[in-house]
Each structure stands twice: as structure tokens, then as C-alpha cells.
Length: 206
Ligand code: DC
Image (tube, rainbow, N blue to C red; front, side, top):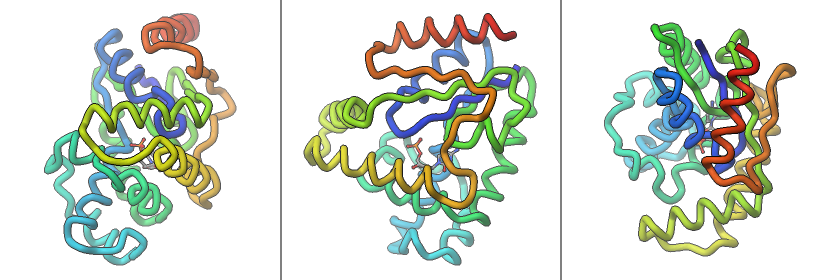
């Protein structure tokens, strides 16, 4: 079984994907972490995430397991990942990795922006997870505080809105619900309630 989960930053899709993978005995791939890894490798090398030639060179020779989750979630990495993710050649490399992962038994839950539309258009179930930008910024701000990072709620909100704008309006594989995706708005749901709602959708469509 393949479950495709898409949605904007901090919509809850990552946590949901992890819980669903455990519930259904599937593997999980956080596809945003692939773009984050390329972005972080560029930043660590002192490069510019907008430099396509540099991004492509790094993406081709990347060891995708070299960074910890905390490093991938560090300040500025999401923004740089969003810039890198708008490059068609970089996306082509990622597409191969994601499809190979999805094809391995026993199946997988993949979360990202273009899973239901491009990476796994034949997924058994597709969810499009959203929440109001202000709510999403609140979640990311709390995570940053727990991690001891500096910054204000307003900065986090601006970062989220900028990324939404870039991820939604880019020419290649933009963030949008697949025609057959089930919409799940988590603005007023805690994670347990969102998980139960997702399980109802999945059990009802498989
Ligand atoms: O989900 P995230 O915040 O970790 O993703 C980081 C960036 O990577 C996001 O702003 C857009 C990009 N991304 C993408 O373009 N396609 C995906 N399938 C996953 C992430």
C-alpha cells in the first residue's frame, strides 16, 4: 500500500505520516528532508542555494544520511530547501530516489508537496493536509523554542508564508492537492484527532 500525504510547511503532515506508517506497518519517507539535506550541504560548503550548478553537483553526490534531524530542521534550512526544490534537475534526482523507495515492499507513506500529483500518482490513498498559516507558524515557533533556537513568531510566520508562496507558484511540481486527494484541515485538530480522521479516510478507501 502507498499512502501519499501532501501539504504546506507545518500542516502536521510529517507527524501524521510517521504515525500512519507505524499503524499500517509501512516505511516512511519525509521527502522534504531530501531537499533540506541538499540545501544544508550547500550552506555548509558556503554556497548559494540559488546557484543551480552548485545545487545539482551537490545533489548528484549527496550522502542523504549525513545529517541529523535537528540539523535538517535548523534555522534557514527550510527556506534554502524551498529554493533548491524549484530546480527541475534537482527534482529529477529526487524523483528517482522517492519512486525507488515507494516501490520497495511492503509499501510506504511518503509526505511532501508533490507526492499525490507527481511522485506517486497511483497511490492507494492521497491526503492533502492543511492548516491556517497562523496556526502552522505557532507550531513551528513552539518547536524552535523547544530546540533553543532564537527568533520570533512573526519571523516564523513570514518564513512560512514565503515558502508557501514559492512552493505553490513554482513552475515545476507545485504544491497542490491531487484531484483525488482527501482534504484534512488540522487547524483545530490535535495530532491524535487528526490521526483518527486520517485512519477513517484510509480504511474507508482501501
Ligand atoms: O516539508 P519540509 O518543510 O521539510 O520541506 C522543505 C522544502 O522542500 C519545502 O519548502 C519545499 C520542498 N519540498 C518539495 O518541493 N517537494 C517535496 N515533495 C517535499 C519538500
